[in-house]
Image 1 (cartoon, helix red, strand yellow):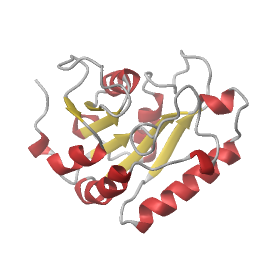
Image 2: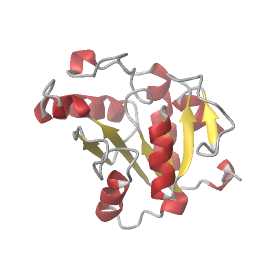
Image 3: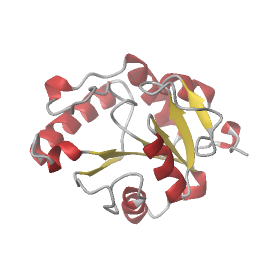
Image 4: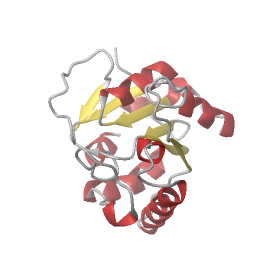
Length: 183
């Protein structure tokens, strides 16, 4: 039985994937530079709403492009600095960004493993995983959420064919704005 969206209050934590949630995912490629980064307009409208609903908002994102040598940590820092600036400009916020550049699918920090959730809990000890939601556009995000003990919300932005109802998905929405408006 999924959690009730009406139970969400400012004590809750929001975990967000990045590509396919906040910005457009590049098919068969990576967002390697700020010029490659394109916000979903709905996300820019959703993030200020979410900032008022959650005490902590973090991004957890796999960034294999670094491990493959297609981009550098500094390239990612530039993307995230500009992204944060724009989110702040519209009244939203991201409290921290966790990323995993590892190529090995068994890396403890690579989703679906829960390492980035554990990093967040270490940095923000007040996080209660039972009062946390993972929002993502892939089943690996949903498995990450389940592996960390989080509730899950699937966004059908890039993989609308993903079956639902689904034991790893509590709720499904078209995009971040429809999720934000449901709270």
